[in-house]
Amino acid sequence: MLLKRAVAPVPIAGSKPTGRGSGQTPGRTEYASTTGPHLARRLHRPGRSQTSHDAATNLISLAQAIRRGDIHADEIKARNLISGLQYIVDPSQTSVDDLRRELAALRTQLEQAIAAQEIPDATDAEDARESLAAAETELAQPVPHGNRVLRKLDEFSQIITRSAETADAAGKLGALVISLAPVAATLWQIAGRILGV
Image (cartoon, rainbow, N blue to C red; front, top):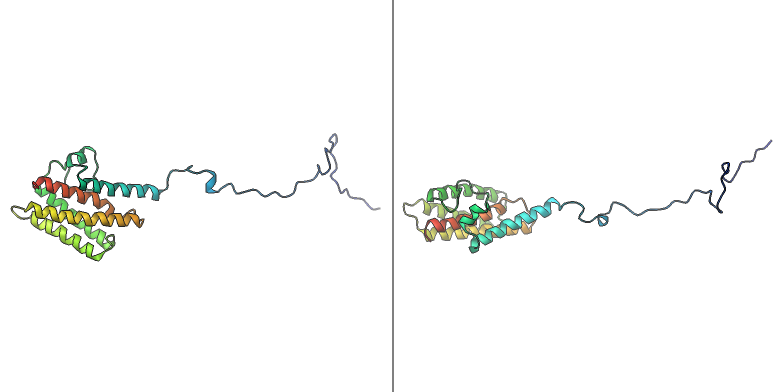
């Protein structure tokens, strides 16, 4: 005896089909992606690179403001703007010896930046070394010539700030030279104040 198989779904007791095809499984439906970045813009905080870029730009802007004279030594301490000074606690009250020690520490950091090729132009790197060395040598004199010290620190600060701008534009956001820009500008301003220039 042959058994016939049912080709249509067998209704459960008490259930009624509502229309043709109601007992069939729907066909495969494709759905759009639910993980695209366009679905939830700004859901997360800005990434590290954006935050770092803003910080680098702020440091460069700070160096430029100090060099223009928009920010003075007493404001630097009051607003806690510079974190790279090692020996000068209060830029408005410092000595030539403190400045000399800061320049020695700055020389060490300059050499690290040069070794890391953060000053892209070799001539600029050498000029920065020479300017800083000349300022240190002049400060070691019994009576330092203030204009010469200030001129050499100005040259140094300009080179460091330009190199910081280049590093920022190239996306080298962790570059030491970026953090040195406001320090160099601050030391230039401090030198002018304590040497009476």
